[in-house]
Amino acid sequence: MSTVRPGEEHPVQSAHDDPADHRVVDDRPGVDDHTAAQAAGVAFEVNDRSSRADLARDRDAQLAVRLALANTVEAADKQLMPILRGVDVFTAWEMVRTNWQGKFDRCQARLGTLELDAIVATTARLGARVVLPCDDEWPTSLDDLRDPPFCLWLRGRGHLDELVQGRSLSMVGSRAATAYGTHVAADIAMNLAGSGFTVVSGGAFGIDAASHRGALAAGGRTIAAMAGGIDRLYPVANTELLEQVMVDGVLITEQPPGWSPQRQRFLSRNRLIAALTAGTLVVEANLRSGSLSTAREADDIGRVVGAVPGPVTSPASAGTNKLIRDNKAVLVGDAEECADLFGAIGDDCAPDKRAAPTLFDTLPTEQQRLLNAMPVVRGTSVERLAASAGMTGREVLRALAVLGADGLVERAGPGWRRRQRV
Image 1 (spheres, helix red, strand yellow):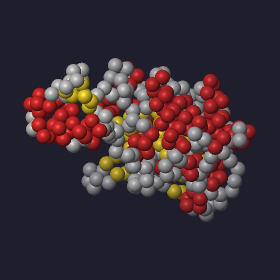
Image 2: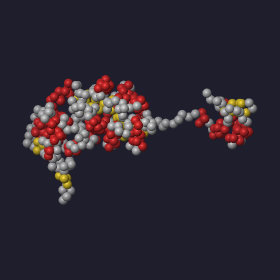
Image 3: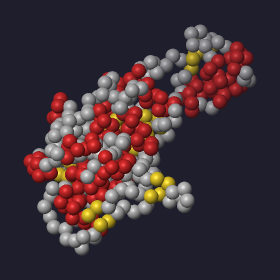
């Protein structure tokens, strides 16, 4: 029976430095392949000669331990996840199952109630599926996270990896959004989805819901990342919206069926939203908005962050305005600027925005000077116009002829005046 230990390239918090040679010594336990597989509660054969590589290639083995880990370790656990960071899932499961060095006490209550068969049955009953890192549908963008999810539960017809490949962005913001925020979010999402972008959000009230609805209104594709189990469409008031998302898009979560949305799970959900796409747009957020954590996660893993500015008098936009002021986000005003920021280089460039030129802008300098010097109510003489505009009488007469033909000036008694434009 083979025993495999984690390599020295995976130091953990419990590792200690040897002052003599500065090597990092990893004292985490070795794991017997057969024991690790059977510990997960799934019946399949792994003979004593199977290598760790063979076991890793066995999807059933991967599924077993990843389901077990997802059901016992909170994804946002800042104490446990660093301990498991960098080791293979079989070693990680053995550490959790055996309560290695007493560090996994908080997992023991869940171990006593772990029933993988029931989890698999519930997933199948919902028409959902479990996606693993070894599957084609797994987005490799999630691997940029320091602690990627053990697995994902998905519901919907969309293929997750295909949906986020290429042109996609995440849109987040306040649940207590203003009419301004929801209008801007829906408009941007609708225009982007209409041009082929996939819109990712969190399915919540406010900006999330507006983003999903905007994408759906354009017949586009959207993804909702959930903070609870795949069997819990949350919030309940958005059930119809989330069902519409599943038609061509998909719902995703790393939380097992039956798990309720809780604060720490919303925070762990935010990191998935940040990692799935090329960048995150914060549409409206106050200073305490959870969407700012999504922006931080996106920035931490090298994603582009954009923010829609709001009125300086509106607390609802204080968070987005601060992101822009602190150079943590690029100011974005519409869908074209979003496409320019998050889209393909050379294909989605926003046009340079300039005010539409007026007839006055097209006039030669002399005619502009004369027009600026002309009165609006009473007519004035050529001599006075020449003095006021700093021009010769001949230049004034020549300019008056052109301006009169364009309908910009008119006769007023013996003199001239600017014509009132209707």
